Every structure is written in structure tokens, then in C-alpha cells.
Length: 591
Image (tube, rainbow, N blue to C red; front, side, top):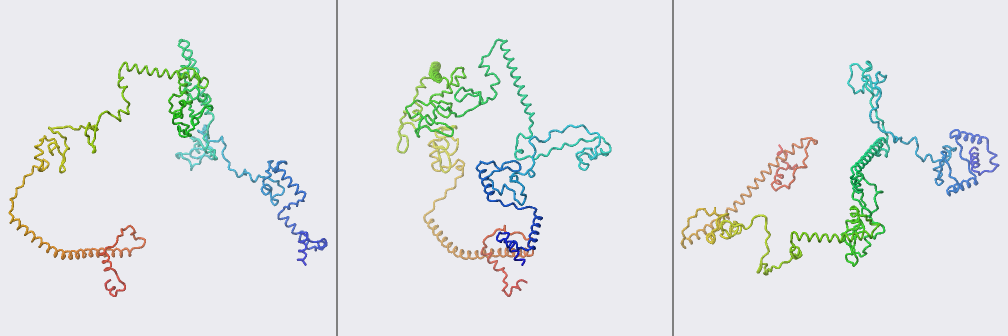
């Protein structure tokens, strides 16, 4: 009965039951429902949000759309800040199970003040210098018992322990230590180059420069008064160049535009600037095979009008990258302005061009007059009328005829290049130098075939005497050997027969001896090698036994030993010394 009543109760909650069924609910079910509701309210303490009607839901959606379009004012949070209508509801609204009374807010999306790390202010910095205070004359409670300072205790005192501390004497109390402030700087504060800068320092610099400027002005006024008193008044241009203001840096605002007046003392450089009304260099000749133009440095290597019939290319702006036939017009204008001529590149271009042309004519005339004066005074016109340098170096009028082998038949041979050492120096009546003759590994003189250096030349007589044997002088002093008497034919025949018999006997003996000796020598060598191999094998076996008796942790490494292929003698020794466990006599051999 209880289960059926519960089913009807839940159906009523879902809206599936009729009025008759709802009226027939027993009192036990009603009391149970009231108990559950009261228990839930006691646990949570919050009510669920009321269900909105369709009209309210429609109005809410329309308001959201109007806010997104900007027709309605944005929603405001509890702090008075606007909420972006495009932010989703699950971000801005507070859940009903936390606090249904709270309005939508974005405070939880912003940095929380209690979680932010507190950094030092921009004006905080370390204290510079110890602050002067009145010296303490009375011991303070809680101070160091040894020296009397209030910033540390007795166990941390760095002063020499006194016989009677300041606590009991009350005299000689040390001043307190200077404790610095602990700064917590952020990322920008650690990298601020002006951190800790005192603005009063800059004010002192400004005042110092103001004093220097005032001193300069007073000094200039005194100089002007002295010039007026003496009557030697300097020119305006000379005064400007001698003034100390010229040495100071100029601002870019005070400099004339590029292409106007130029002063070398002004410390500013404007590189490769072009006035807008001038034609660009790369537009003067559109032929791709013409002068090369580098766009990176804006430099033109050659004259763009070199292969055309147009006028020569003159620079409009100061440039060091173009090789022009005519001098640059701006450079001439600057030099003329420095010399005192009132010319301007933009204001009076016609006047500047006429002055430039007249300057070129006068310059050529001056060079010609200077050249004629030097020739009249010192002479040397014939040297100027010499043929070109190419003809002098490449061709001459001397006739030389060569053979097919390269030898000179007619004319003079080319001069041999000389060295810094003396050559072709002939001494002691020699017609050739030392080293002109070579024979049997010895140097000598070609004129007499003498092998002795710095000897006197003997001429043809010396060649005849040395033709038999060309020996050095020391070797020629050896005693001559006694000449043997000639032998008869019979004696020569007998000696030949004896030599043949000796050769036959020696061959027979040699064959027998070689065969026997070779076998015996091979056997002896093998025995010696086997003996050495057996000794080495015994030594190895003893070493193995010794290593096996040692502990594994104390055994040395053998990876660094040299490994070679064993020889035949070593293999034979290994086989002879190898222990065979299947051998019945192994136990007797081991005893």
C-alpha cells in the first residue's frame, strides 16, 4: 500500500495524476514529504530559482540581443563596471547554489588583490650613508650587554668581549648598526637604469652648465670690449670661427637642408640623401647594360651617359661613389661659400653654374702658366715629347733574329736579370768562374778543368794533364802502385783451368752442405721456438692459477693487453700443456 501511494505521489509531482488521485493521498505520505522538505532546507538552506514564464524568458532574450547590438545599456556588476554582453552566462552569472542573491559579475576573472605579490614603490631605494643620530649615553633594556647596541644581542656581538659589559658600566655604548631596506622589485624595476637616481643630482649638473655658460658670455663681452678699446675689431666671419660655440654639437633642426650651405665643422652627417625634384641616378639611363647601380648603397659606379651622345654626367648631390669627369657642383658651392662668396645651390643655380664654368677656365689657364714657367726655368721639354709608355715597354727598334731552336742568330739577346750579389768576377787569370765545370761530382773551372778553388789558371796545359783522370788535388797526392809484369799465354791458360776446377768443386760441396745445413738449421730454429713457447705457456698457466686464487673484486683488468694471432710454436705448446679430463693418466700427471 505504501509503495503504490509513493508511485502516485511521484506521478503527481511530474503532473501525470488527476485531481481524484491527488485527493486520495494518505496522511503518511504527506507527513513523509514534509519531513524530506524540511530536512533538505536544513541541510542546504537555499531555495531553487523560480521557474520563469515564457513571457519573462522572451523578454530576457530580447534584452540580451539589444545589449549585443548596442541598443540597450550593458549590464553592470556589483562594482559598477560594465559586463560585456558577448560573455557567456556561465562565466558572468553566479551559480544559484552558492549565492542566488548575487548579481552577475566578472570579479572572479580579474586579478585578486589578496593574491597579488606586493612590490616596492618606484621611489623606494637603499639608504645611502648612515643616518646621524645623537649618541646614546644610557643603556637601553633589550640591547647588547657587551657593547650596548640595540640592533643585536650579546651572542651576535662582533666587538671584543669587554671585561665589564656596557650593561653594568653604562659607558662606551656603541652606535646601532645601519640596517638596509629589503626591496622587492618587479621585472621592470630590476632592469630600470634610472632606479635609485636622485633628481637633485641632475639639478646640480644643470646649475653647473648654467654657470659655465654665464662665464663664457662674460668672457666674450670682455673680449669685445678689449677689441673696441684697442681699435682692432675682427671680422664677423673670423669671430664666428674663433668662437668656442662652434665646437659644441649642433642639433639637426639647425642644419640646413641637404644640398644647401655646408660647413665641415658642423658635426652632423646626412648620407646619400636626394632632393625630391632631382632625377634619380637609376633613371638617367634605362639601358640594363649601362652603368651599374647598387640599390643598397645608392651608388652608381660609372657615368650613365658614357655610351650615349648626351652631355656628361655631373653630380647634383655630394657623392664619393661616382667617377665624374667634371667636379661636383655642390662641392664647388660649399668651397666658394667657405671662401666668402655668396652663392646658393637652390637660390641662384644660374649664378652658380656661371661661376663654376669660369672657375674651370681659370684653373686650366693657371695650370698651363705654371707648367710653362717650370719648363722655362728648369728645361726638360724633350722628356715630355717622349713616345707613350705602352710603346716604350712593349716595342723597340732593335732587330733580333732567332733560330727554330730559340737561339739568337742576329742581334743582341735579352739582358739577363742581375741579382744583388757580385757576378762574373774572374780571378787568378781565369776566363771562367768557379762552378762552370762539373765532372765526377766535383766543381771546377771550365777554362783549365781545375778542381781546386782559387787556384791559378793553367789554360790548355791543365786540360791536357787532367784529361786522363779528373781527381781532386788531395786524392792526386796518393802514392802510385807498383806496376805488375805482363803474363804469358801459357800462364794465363793454366790460371783459367785452375779457376774452373775450383768452381766445380765449390758448387758440389755447396749443394751438399746447403741441403744438410738447411735441414739442421730449420730443426734447431723450431726447437728453440718451441722451447720459448713452452716457457711462456708455463708462465701463463702460473699466472692463471694465481688469478683464480684471488677474489673476483680484486682481480685486475686484462682488456688493455695486446692480442696477437698465436704462432705455430705457441699452438704446439698449448696442445702439449693442455689438460685433458678424459685422459686416464691426467691424475698421475697432475701429482
